[in-house]
Image (cartoon, rainbow, N blue to C red; front, side, top):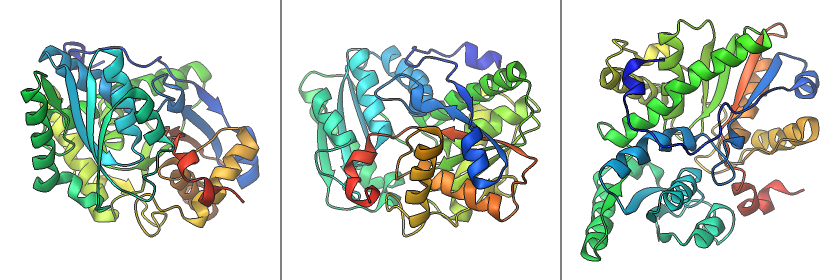
Length: 339
């Protein structure tokens, strides 16, 4: 892989490679394309998810700095924060989170698991996730860090915005996944045309985009946003990919126009399931016995299914759907999901 990545500190949190499975029944149900599922929900950290790859680099940096506590933010049912807390416990670190209240902030789903892990959780009254990149939340995280310092802890604050190192290291985790995918494609004797995934903050797609370009891969990455609309989503991916490239010395620059995004499946906003999302969750479960989440992967698959019906993916194409995890959120959304 990239020499610069091999030189970075890294801790092992996941079990790789995660499986790549042939979803024949799902493909037949929607009339093509041929679909494979990249099972990062089986990454092995806190019920799985795509964040484990990112945290291997982020928490290695925290460990290098002597951290005893982790501080971060996201929504109340955040899979990132759950995996951060679990990884922290594995490395002997406590976790404190300032969370946006979101749609569900009862002690269920990821918040129930945070409770079991003993995380310190403050839930804000606002659900406006656009604030995750602003000074308001940055100041809140810094204040929590100062409180921890006063108690004798050495906190490491994980912020999601560029030019924060943690944001760049998160992208690096998914650059490595591109090579893993290529190796699996070769082993299975397949040549996928597209890799499709739900796009939140854009870091996972940025890593795959950067890795694919470095490897001269023939497959194209397609994102289905669950947080940002088209222009903002494309810019987030391009900016993060370029920043990670600069950090690694790869010499690759990406513009928003090079990023493929389809934002028709976001619905009313982050964390609010659409009818298509809920249908996709049941379709995946009843064809492949695989569970998706109502925040990310349900909307991602809804996009894949609808784009197939519209002809963006033909019946002769081979498409890989990245299952990024988030399954615990199903239980918090039981009223929306159950029929």
